[in-house]
Amino acid sequence: MSCVHKPQKSLVLIGLMGVGKTTVGRRLAHALKLDFRDADEEVEKAAGRSVSEIFADFGEAAFRDGERKVIARLLEEPPMVLALGGGAFVDDETRANVKANAISIWLQADVETLVRRVTRRDTRPLLRGDDPETVLNALLTRRQAAYAEADIHVDASGGSHQITLDGILRALDAREAEA
Image 1 (cartoon, rainbow, N blue to C red):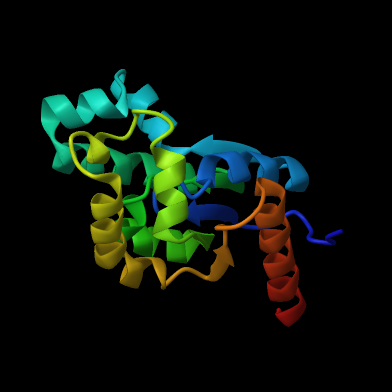
Image 2: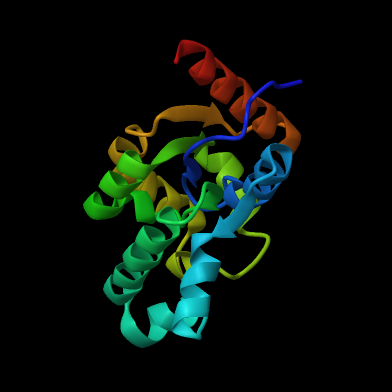
């Protein structure tokens, strides 16, 4: 379907939790014959503990500091598809680093869709003990301006991961055609 060539820069997927960054990212990497990395998994490897444990033991600020360093290291590597945690792109330093060294892709979905997706598993530290819809609405309000700075915006609310992947590939094709 797509004629996108292997990108010269990493492709960085951003968006709220539950939007499909990891699942779609794996498919995108496969389609473009690139490596896939998940920033949360890379932070866990570097810290030797889970994201939930880092939040519980050290707090969100310590997690964000480690996340910033891990993302900076990953962006120095050859082009890949990189899925960021939902709050990573809000960090000014991380956002500037992504803008300088990658193509950012905001996967967007309505909060109702995200609530259905994130309540399937209890692995989200920011949702523990709170109403997911309230938390996601608050996160969207805080993060939307930063997310809007992404190079590409793709609707990930409806249908399958394949539909989202096709939307990304079309957007990359259009971007390549403009260059």
